[in-house]
Image (cartoon, rainbow, N blue to C red; front, side):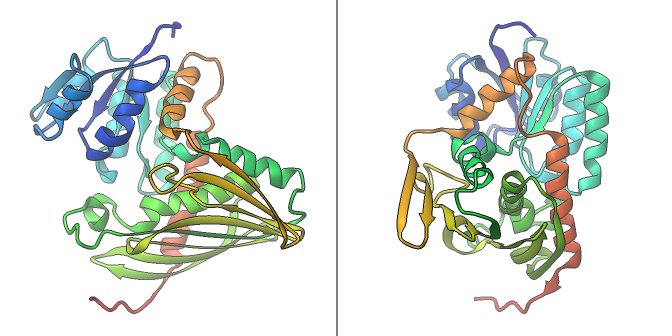
Length: 333
């Protein structure tokens, strides 16, 4: 790949792509938002308003038409979860680099065929686990590695929002790979794996099921000798937080997953229960940073921080939580 800008196409005109990743690709250095494909006409006009000269493909063969475009170098895939593996493989077969929304697969073992396809093609494919591109996570990991809070003893996490009124949301349908753990448990599990560099063991969960998907999951595990507890839900008021509690202090991330849209990103370092040092990130766009990092990986300038092997590890942890989960009573309101 040369130093020229990477021409991006978006496979599926999802609202998330329009609101976040489309603008990020458009704003990123070394990237050009060149095309978008949708089987319907939904959101295509909005993409044209964002990028007037963008190529649009619509109709039943829209996705393949975009993949056949020789001017497109890379594709971003925000399709429903159950379509991710198939279209990632098709994109790689068409010679395109791939950045695919999470969960990239519905089961950890499915990553093996993606890894094999990348090895055969020599192309880069990765899950869009955007939070690791935000500097607050590298800072948190470094604080713990430097002993800023002494020996790490416990990790606590929460990611909650209430989408019960959105009855047609694909996150609430088992046939499209829905559920809170697949959708947002990837963040609580994945961030803990990144910070500790360890894999979770003794995974258990208490799950409230609704329409065959987990609407609430309370997960416990161990990362070595570090205790882990986190809940994810699509049935509680908006909230997100991660804390790392050590023998000599505590680190708290106030907007660990959606900084900017949820609230301003800040990493609080609490020592001895008294002093608090706060590192704030008022103007960081993790989606732009993700696109730029992907471009550098394609150009061979550096490795992409979210490898398929890393994403497989997170998905395998989610698989185990779903498999080992005990059911909780659920009262509809």
